[in-house]
Image (spheres, rainbow, N blue to C red):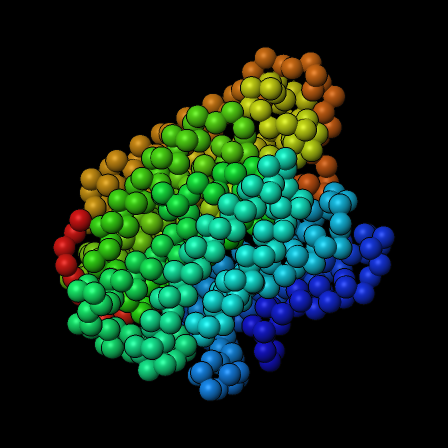
Length: 515
């Protein structure tokens, strides 16, 4: 199929334009069009996965067209084993998100138009191979999220939306400075493939204000991406944004948008500035450890179920950072160390995907109970297992997956991260295992109070999870269980690309010392 990647990116815009011609009072038709468009995009993503050559570690299905030649700006798209899982994840969660949003009755036309625009922005980031195009798609995500939280969110929606906007905008400004620095020092090009080859050489030995240019640009990009992950101490926007956002937007925010920061680091920092990777790996591992412990402790202190799940995201993304730091194990390129780097990096990418499915499931299930009880106070429930046994079973699956129980996908990715990072960051890995105990504490604490505590007579007649809600949860639960038992299809998909990435980091970068 010609222009497959463009179709995946721009199909939601086609749906948005179609919605523009539909009268405001035709809310069901607007929702149906959004569902059809998102479903078609998901089918295209599945088709892309089916024809993707797993043995090739470089970009496939590339599209290139001149755009603004006077500034060497080109429309370039491509997909590899790093971006393909994220494309599938966004397509899946975008499709599910339409059905999670089915009860939206306020300004339906505007909501679903912004929802589809957000989808295009995210897909564009994952597939763009021109830095200018990448940045445009990155910024396209900002406005829809601002309005989706600020208009359709909870009581503090305006404050949450503004805080999200300012944090993200600050990161975008730093990223823009780094992009312009690369443009003017590396041959005045935004082509990311050229920058991957030229930047390590062009910036080698260059000093700015007495500091290494590579380190300056690396930190600028890192902060820009770290805000999105979010990495401590840039995480304070996340809990409020989650609590105030509509359920479907929380699902996309946790399921996909948090992955954009890690994706940006791997796609840009690791390939264009490999020297910075070795210089910063120790700090990255420490920040990951802080995320793991701080996120878990904050989650343990929460009474609001949605805020608990939000802080669990901070915790889980910390493991991803620790896995990414394991790349320095490959510096000697002997067999054991290379395997450690592959395990750590593979675990990090797998953790990104697993957290996407698990966190999406968690936020959907929080939304299910909120729609019935109209609050999320953990201590305000009790004994719901008898009233909603099917719902209880799915929450149990989501909670057990979230705490990394064997048999679920999260266990595999966390184990790979520990195996990969242990040879180079033993102390950090040992301390980070405390996060597993804290995860179990806050998930089991919440589960016991909500489902097996003293029954609250006020909720004796809560209806069971319905068919539409099951339709949104079952695919995520199935993926989590299948990949927990048989992760090979996913790991085979990413392995060739990660081998190329590790090789480029080691061959182009240098080695300093473990932190």
